[in-house]
Image 1 (cartoon, rainbow, N blue to C red):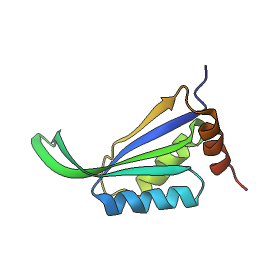
Image 2 (image 1 turned 180 degrees about the vertical axis):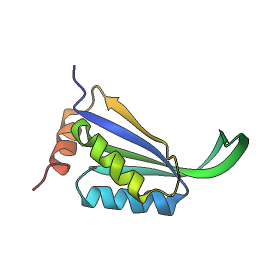
Image 3 (image 1 turned 90 degrees about the vertical axis):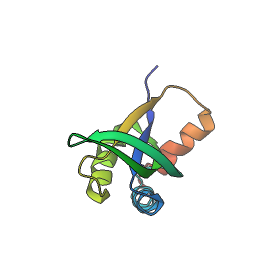
Length: 108
């Protein structure tokens, strides 16, 4: 089964950045909708230092064919030098919802 749809999992500096990115991608029809988890704790090594940060998770639903363009749009708006943007395939789901994603991310 092909994955015509995917999720983009993005960590952001906070809920404001996540919402700004989400609004831009939805407006440009690069994503159908977004979920924002406002606060998580992230632990990671960056430039040889163990870091702890408070971040937000942004989950975008889109068509796989738009994922690369959406990723570039996220990178342009993102505060991080190396943002986490992961594409996760949707292999199945509610057909009505998947059709809605397609409709929302197709030019009028």
